[in-house]
Image 1 (tube, helix red, strand yellow):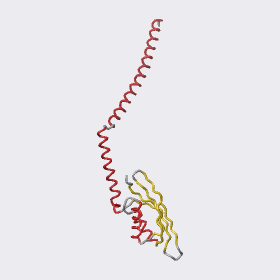
Image 2 (cartoon, helix red, strand yellow; image 1 turned 180 degrees about the vertical axis):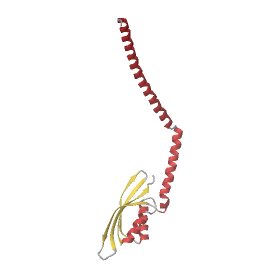
Image 3 (cartoon, one colour; image 1 turned 135 degrees about the horizontal axis):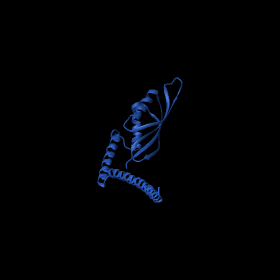
Amino acid sequence: MSQKKKYQFFISAVALLFLYIVATGVFDRWAEVFQLYDVLTVKEKSVLNPDALAEKKMNLLAERKSLGLMLTKGAAQYDQSGTGVFEYLNTNAKDAGIRFESLTPIEAQTNGQIKEIGFKLQFVAEYHRVGVFLNSMEKGVMMSCVKRIDLTSRAATSPLLQVSVEGVVNILSSK
């Protein structure tokens, strides 16, 4: 091979190498650009306009109101306050044939619109009456939950139990 042909071959090889490097770098960047464009079009489709957002907000507020009414529907006979909670507990106790020795409120906690009113009860009753009371309280019209219960037999031959119950009732706060 002549010197001139070697030189032309070298220049051609360098030019091809340069074109390969440029092409692969450019193609990778173009692929990235197309990928980002696809992400942008997906985001554009998922973004709502202000009118649609306002309509969605109104629908959510209506749903919130209807759910609140469902929660308090059965509890309408009781005030959504501490007084209503204690009236509810007393009514369930009376229906179960129980009389409280003490009914003590525990500090209320608020989480959004839900207010959690705690209570502590002490009473003496037969085992089955305790079960009837707890069942009617937890399955009643107000959302209540027993957190702790202590049962102690008064005497070895007595059917009576000394009962201590701690629990909470959830109500809708007046906001």
